[in-house]
Length: 391
Image (cartoon, rainbow, N blue to C red; front, top):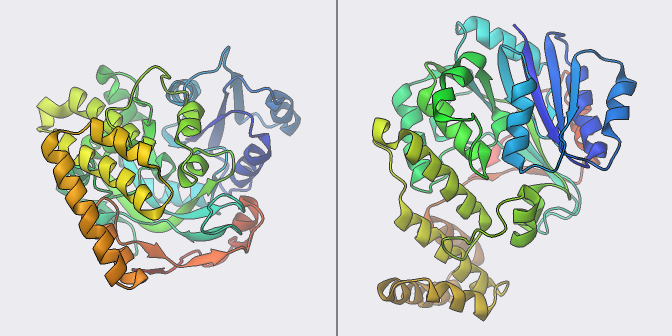
């Protein structure tokens, strides 16, 4: 069984080298790396050639492509029996390939293996954690209290997707967390490319959960999600929405359905594609009212915290119906009163649960301990990689 590691990239050779190294140091040799270079100005081709490794395949796009097109280009070049999408600033943890081989054999070729992960932010990425941190990223409602691999009942997978279409974060969408069988990818072709919408991971992860014949979940960390100053996550964490859209090369002429964060806008686009492709078959509908609620909540929260402007609120309110304006203005007034009356920690819990989009997930963070993601890999070779969490 061969595993294809897809590595789309653009002008991030510094990080790409580290990602590749975490694959080349795997114990198992039955893998290929597929690099789709999205019209980089950096000489990535020469670096790949210098490695002299026939398992690393490389192609450069003839022009700059949107992220989703580049992901599909990488997939089209791959030949493995199973596929995992890996960002060029991410890493596999030690023994990932061996562990995946073992799970595929143990559970008799499942269509999808969804794993736990670690999150590593580089220094100067997250303004709340300027030294960078390492933390558990192993959140999914269907994990429950499990600590070992298990088969996810189909109904739990469908429920998780329904909650996603209701704009509730039931699991992490990062595509790096899923190993997908070639069989499933081929079976989905009648509905178009495997990756669709400007947020291809939101779409593909949900579709895989819906259509996989058997899903295995392994809550143990197997990969590291990296966030660098050149990641989309950097723009989101620093509220630089326009730059984030440009990073994805989303349609610059397309207007968001409602002012707010591009995360929710991309989320909506992915869920609408799922509804178009599978809504009738599976009875799936996007909760557009919830979308409007979470977008409005984002704008009012920014204003409340002093990071948003009055103009942002006015732009939002021009997009709302009269009833919505009255509702949200009233909620904003109540929130201001509660914030003054409650201790900060309690207010954070109340405000997070009021919208209910994200879970009460507050992992233990190891701050400022690593300069880069390869150091995380190296210090976990032969070590216990489980990290606790607080809620």
